[in-house]
Image 1 (cartoon, rainbow, N blue to C red):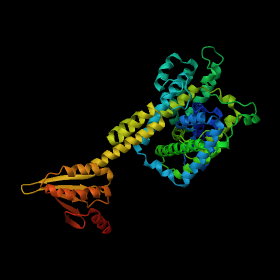
Image 2: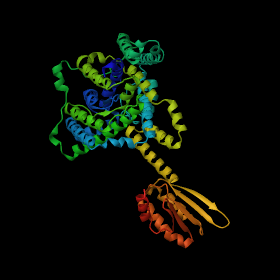
Image 3: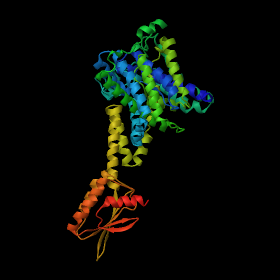
Image 4: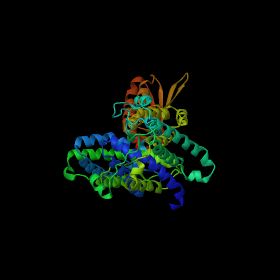
Length: 525
């Protein structure tokens, strides 16, 4: 692990600067105390990072859970009761891991996973544009199209025109140019520029400029446009701002329902992020999904016990980690240590960081996730890949992450049904002066999904023909299809249709029992 410190430490610093505003923003979007987001980020980095089998995945509070968390806190009436639900959600996730439910993530089509990555990239860019210009009406980390302020993603961008903060804009533009220049030119000139990330330099220069601008009238940046971390007067004061769970209603229906919802949604988001992060990994490492659920469960138990939000593996921080050339899990762990050190030691200094320079970092992270070339590639792969991909992207942008993913999944299932309908068999008509032969060759697997297409073709067969039904390649024949075929043999006599069944055992004329014949076919193998 330690031989990659030259990669992992710079990466962890970049992830730290990405995670810092997101932890705070997601807490605000969830109607939770700001410190709860930071606690979740610290636990996600250190605890989950140590237990997880992912080499480059990063965990922390997730924007996809913000609406669920806000609703849960509102329905329960206080944050302490909600924390007990977070603890119970962690226990449920442990059970998910022990029951080996991590395979669920593998059932999402690649087109939907790529659509998720691209949609998140676009959302990051669109949501960060207002912060880049110094218009901070919405908390960072929110992902819903309809914002709490009453605006939507696009109207907030339009309103930027009348709400530009000049100092923020200058720092944002300078940070963006600096990162691009550093990563595309300087990093190719010398090893030093590869080790020191351009994002870190941009944040440092942006912070210095903000302090300089604070002395002027026209360029001064107000507090709401800066990072805002709670600042206790002493270490002992942390005890007064930390929140702990209230277990007095631990086994009530409300707590159980919220806990199960959190566990289910957090686990699904984690598994999808694991799948997506493994695809981004240039070394194509595979993360053990059941171990990941176990790690997330431990993380959520600890986070809930000390006042933190629910935790998932998150794609924004994970992709920033990949893009910064992280090699091992030390990067994720050290970013959590940095969050802890920053909250304890230098909150005042961090509160001088302009949101606009962090927006510049995130905009570039988003662009790398949503490159235009990916749209072209998915289009050329054909409609079966492009349709679920583009639907997932559009729905994520115009609703939120969870609705977008499930809509993309439903479209993916519909595509499978359509292709299954089209590919269940092959018809070959042979016509001559003496006979009218129609060959129907079944695919390897025939399920109930193929009922409609097979029944249609059988119904449309002309009178006085011979049907040659070839099942020599078929390894699985659903009983629903068996019934259709057996019923058809009876009905065929009325249309003077003769059925010949082809298999490895030879040809059978007008078979009366397909199920018995198919059992013999299996036994012969």
